Image 1 (cartoon, rainbow, N blue to C red):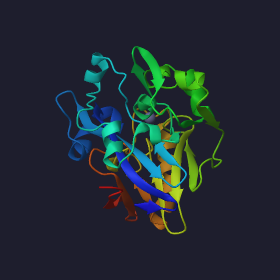
Image 2 (cartoon, rainbow, N blue to C red):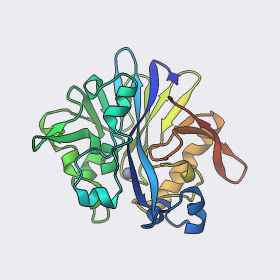
Image 3 (tube, helix red, strand yellow):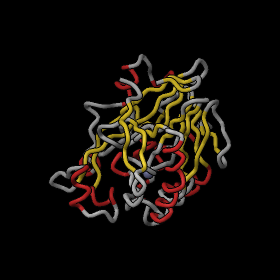
Image 4 (tube, rainbow, N blue to C red):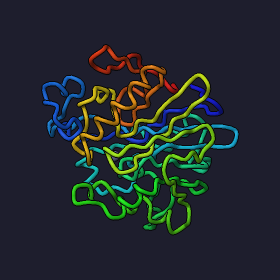
Length: 282
Ligand SMILES: [Zn+2]
C-alpha cells in the first residue's frame, strides 16, 4: 500500500499471548472466546505488528514489539515466540535492516510496544536502531518513569534508558506533526498520552490504532481491555474517532491481531463492525 510519500509494510515482530479476560475487560468469556480462542492458561494468541513507512528521505518504524531481552520465566508467562516472526526477518523480507531505520515512532512505552527498541549485546544494553531518532510523547515518558502500582509491570526502563543516555530520544509535546505526511492523534484511556500516527494524503488515511483497538475484535465500543488506566475514557475515545473512520473510509491498522493487518469499519446504526479486511503488504 502507498499513501502520500510512503510505501507501507506490515512488520510482524513476535507472536505472544495475553490473558483473554484482561484483553476483553467486562466482556464475558463465552462472547470473546468465539473471536479469540483461549489456551489452557486462558491466554489468547496475539502478535506484535509494527508499521514500516518508506519514503525517499525516511524509513520510519512505528513501535518495535516485545524485543529479545526476556528471561525464560516471562517468555513463558507471555508465550513470547520469536522463531516464526521477528524484527530482522520481517524487515529482511522487504530488503531492509535495522540500520536502515531513520526514525522510531513510539506510540507509548509499554513493553510489548518498545521492547524492540533496545537489545543486550555482550551483556550490555544497546539501541537496536543505531542510526535512528526515537520519538516519544512527553506525558507518556513521565508516566513510564514514575508509573502507578497498577501499571508498573507494563513499563521497563531497559527499553529506553540507553537511548536517553545516548541522546537519541526526541520528545513530542502534544499533537504537533514531526514527520512529513504524518498527523498525530492522542488518547488517554489506555495510557496517558498514547500517540497514534495517521498517515495521509488527499485520498487515503490510515491510523495506527495501537492499544485503542488492538485487534479486530475490539472494534465494538464496549470491547476494551482491563489493562486500560481509564476504560470509560477508552470507550469515549473510540466513540469520538470511529464516526470519522467510517465516514471517511480510513484504514485502521491492528498492532495485536494475530490474523488481520488492517481493515475498514462499518456502522450498522447500532454497532461498529469490521467492514473489509485490508492487506498492507504481502
Ligand atoms: Zn499498551
